[in-house]
Image (cartoon, one colour):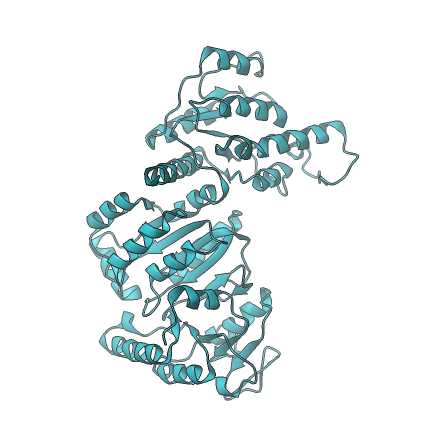
Amino acid sequence: MHPSSPDALKAIFNPKSIAVIGASDTFGKWGHRMVDRPLKTGYQGPIYPINPHKKEILGLTAYPSVGDVPGDIDLAVITTPTATVPDLLKGCAAKGIKGAVVITAGFAETGEAGRRLENEMMAVARAEGIRIVGPNCMGIFSASGRLSLCFPQAPKSGSISFVSQSGTFGVSIAHVAASQGYGLSKFVSIGNQADLGVADYVEYLAGDPETHVIALYVEGFKDGERFFQAARRAIRKKPIIIYKAGRSEAAERAAMSHTASVAGSSIVFDNICRQIGLLQVRESFHLFEMAQALADLPLPKGRRVAILGSGGQGVVGTDACTALGLELPRLDPETAARINALLPSHAPPACNPVDFAGATRTAMQEAEIIEQFLRLDYIDGVISNVPVSPQLFDSGLVVDRSAADHPPHIKAAIDGGARYAALPGKYGKPVICLRFANLENDIMEEMLGEGGIPVYSSPEQCARAMYALVHYGRVRGEMV
């Protein structure tokens, strides 16, 4: 019996034990990577290297076949040549294995001969009740399963799940995301989608409590109608952000040779995305910029934004917001007067954006101004900068927030940062921050992260993040 997609993926992402078929002790081979990476990234279950010519691989006992393994096996990872895969799956079925990640390439993406082998592999899988990730993929990552087949260093744990049809490109994007502090719940390189396809992953992730946002890199679909049906259901629960590659004729040809996918009509795809509320991006890394905001912030009720910054930050931020259809309402006189009282004397009168005029300010002052914004019924969200940290003026300063004897300026900064970080939860409105200085172990960024406030490196990124929140807030509002 073929297991259902959600049940199969639950087991695949959280296996209690894995067997690496084609395991190798030769550095650089896929069979080496698939043993080495779980060992080095904290996988807790048994790893069984399968190689008939070896007794030991990377310190682990090797076995001639999965049938020789004394314990149960939840997941098989296959790295052997293409022609061997169908018979290996029969051995997996005899062992009771229900899930396999087929790293091996050389299937339908290579032409008719490869397509016949892929069909043969799938005939065995369906007959034996095994669900397959791939083939022609680079594996999976699961924070909950503490399993990394695709990353040599496990990324930061988070609530974004990323489904990528490209292995190398997807892993590269995820690496960049991890280097910038974005956290992953799950990653899967889906390859040719011979069995499990984009729709299956969307369906599973929609019900996964550890996933708050679904990000997709897609070149084409095996069953576009099923994908859109799954996405329509999933988007009622959580946002979906998609980068659709293969939009040009040349790129469509590349997609076919890469993962054996038909890219399809971009016009039709765009129209359906709009109808069901999928958020499309035109640049691949925008996936993570937008996903980070959607992961933890409350959704705005409208598109009206306030900006707090200094000089050009406000001007550029205003241009970026208005280009995306966001509005910056003028402040009413009473609110403007209250904010003017919090600004330095040389600052221009408070409008929107509000300009600190380059003056040194405290985290508490910034929190007070942002709170003035959030109290307004005509402001739905705020873009500001990361509160000024005492570490900015002392690069060697290390702040232990648990200490009880902080000097007054450190205590004031911590108190202000804590108030700032609590604002989205207090008012149910999003706050997004721009990073002025990239400080190592910045206590302000640490506290903002605890409050679910994302931090970006440019006004344009901040605007895109706010737009993503506005977009999904509108989508959810239309479903009520």
